[in-house]
Length: 326
Image 1: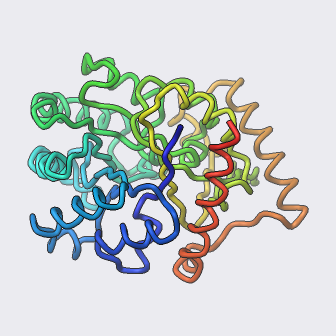
Image 2: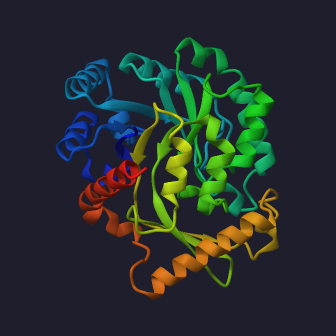
């Protein structure tokens, strides 16, 4: 049976410390927290004493922990200057090992291919592969798996090719943090994408959402769990084979425009075939029906701080219902 909890990203507006985040999660009945990242101030202040307090509280309360703060693209994502991510990931791995955690989530940025002035996707994939090849032994030594999130960086097709180039095998030192809604923004059907990377999934961001057809292409957006068009019943049935997997809610506001009608962006998704596009169109129709009925609409990102606590609490209730219905 799955354990259900949160990714701390959705609670950023509350400015909670890691320990306070755990306390908040325990208060509303969550079974754990995935600390996929920390804001710069909290990250700077983090020390062994705080990590020990987090581990002790989690142990006392029977809460699971997952860690993050790792990256996989060896670039400054703002300036595009090259950077060494080995030490950054080593620190994250050391922290995870000290906490008794074997999962370290990795995320570098996103939406790079939307701007033709950015480095080409092929180049970033090659640089990522080279950088990670030097980290394998370090990650193995720390007994952690680097869980690359299905963010707005690379598609599941591209990540699988990276794993093949690295000669990696599932369950060893590298894997996937499956974000169920981000897949839509990368023009992937959530169920089909889950099937593709299933052996590699070691962590999750459970997020519901919608996708709308626009004049320029598509728009995707987040929704409360259970209100969108992500087929969690099928996804959870697939994930059920992994008894150690935690379902981590990640939620936030905002919408994402995907102007795939522009040929220059369309060619950035060479793996998108007619079958998957047809499925995305069906999901867009489902979303439009909900929008027309007034039951679904994007939440502006700036409104998230006002609703985050209540929405995450409601997400947890709905997620538990969904996971128990399998």
